[in-house]
Image 1 (cartoon, rainbow, N blue to C red):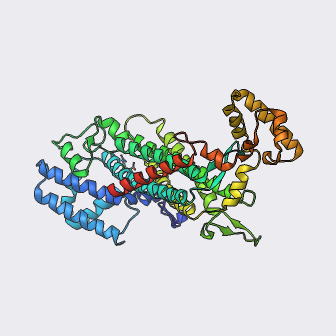
Image 2 (tube, helix red, strand yellow):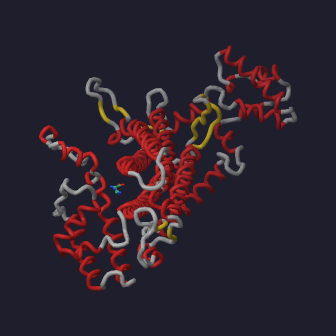
Image 3 (cartoon, rainbow, N blue to C red):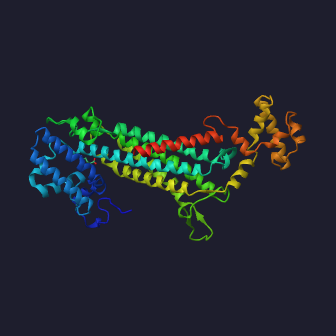
Length: 466
Ligand code: ARG
């Protein structure tokens, strides 16, 4: 990553005091990323000013044509970003002056940088939400594909990281599908409150010109306009909501990565990762480390940090705009980029997992993971569950003492603990255990197959609508 901070790569010792202050207040180093949004907003604003007779149609045309060519310059890398300009707004306006002279000065009629930056950020969030939703969908697709390719694989389900009951691997993977589904809901929800046009709020009190906010909103695709100018220029809730949603999504990815680290360890030995997602050790030649998964887990920290950072920036601010708010951007951009990259990595890692189904099956039957099923067996024979639980608990203690799995006990040994046991108790397997859980939402194969179908349909529908 290149360091794009203002002053980065410059010899700070040679800066005069005046220019070090300039650098301190400048945001151009990072807000230049908003050039597209800034220009889109300015073009719509200029057109609206002309429609309302606030500037002439000819001036608006000069302005919008020049703005389009500035966008081209930036995109082709020809635009000279000068640290003499504080931020992206001033940089573009300065270039506009160079191109069309004093007419450039008319663009900022009925507008302030305060409502301008609020609008840029709202346009930015709209795109960030769209990109995040699409990355979440790709991630979900890889979960569904991997789940679909391992329909009969059984592994131990855990609580307290102790083997608890057998589950289908597909069921386990689809748990993450559900998390991603809720994540998508949170980003969509954030968009609802983000998609509101703040332009027309001016510096803080509204503007003394006959602007048409509704037509501006239509042109920029905002379904609503803000209702209070003070709030509009000082509201950053929509960024906080995005960051909160990003933090929760990262928490989900981090949990998944933790599981992948465990599954691919020699201790578990359930799966292997594509070698691309691992790296060797510089000293131990035998090692393949799950660095990508570890980094996703680690990067979760900085995304949480950005949320906390912005909450802290906002907490003591009186209405309305305060320059503190310029600090909203770097963390936001980093959260957007980090989340996008982590989703992409996780999709690839999940897709590339290869499972050792014999080993996971064996693990699912070891450690008395079928004990609950044995208790349920007694319940089916009429014993109250609490009693059955007690019987099997004593049975497991006995088997543990003998150093034997339950399946190695004779029927006579079973019967010492309860006369209701019959030969068929020994037909309890991880498969029968899983199959018994046909309850909606359970790990029964039919339920899981239906969940897979639902998940596939959902993704297909969304991809088609994209
Ligand atoms: N760079 C500023 C920011 O990001 C833009 C708004 C500046 N407004 C002001 N009154 N100085 O918040």
